Length: 259
Image 1: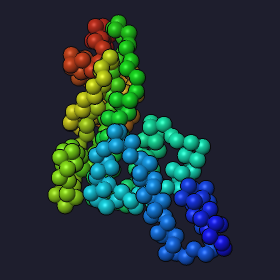
Image 2: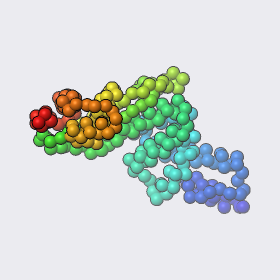
Image 3: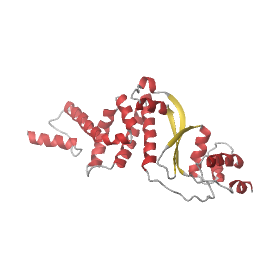
Image 4: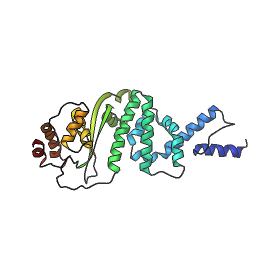
C-alpha cells in the first residue's frame, strides 16, 4: 500500500470514518487507538465547565485516557455531522462514562461514578431555564422549584472537596458510606443547593415527586411495603417542607385529610 493510501486510512481511522486493516499490526492499532483517544479527550476540554471534578478524578485514578479510548468510536460517529452542542456532549459523556465506571466495579471507579452523578445533577439543575410557577395554593403537593434525591455509596462530598483542592488521592479519599443528598433549585433562582438527608426523608420526597397528594403518597408507601404512615403524620412532614419553602402551602390540606 502506498504512503498516500496509508495516510488516508489513518486519517479516516482518527476521524472515526474508517477501520484499519493491512499493513497495520496490533501494535500499530494500539498506538493509533491511544492517539485517537487523546484527540477525543482534547475535544472535551469545554466539558470542564460542566464536569470539572469528574475529569479530575478520572485523571487522578488513571482512567481518563482508557475511557476516552473506549468512547472514541461512539463519540466520533455521533460527531461526524458536525460539532456537538455542549449540553449534548455532556449528556453523551455522562451516559457512556457511567456505564464504563459501572463495568469496572472497583472502589475507585465507584467513587468516580458518584462524583459524576453529583456533578451531572448540578449541571442539569443549573442549565435548565428558570421557571416561575403560579403562586396560588394548590390542591395537592406542589414543589416550589426543582428537587431531586440521589443515593450514593461513597463519601462523594469528601472526594469532591479533595478534588477541588487538587489534593485527591484514591488511597485516602475513596471511602465507603451510603447516604442521600437532596438537590434543590427554587423557582426564579439561579442557585442550586444540596443537603444530606436521612433515609426516611429521602423516601418520602422521592415518593412525593411521583404522587401528588398526601393520600397518594400513603398508598404508594403501602404498595412498596415501606410501612404504615398515618395521614396526619404525613401532613406534618409535608407542612414542614412547606414552612421551609420547598412546597407550596396547602391551607386546606389538614382539614380535607381529617374529613
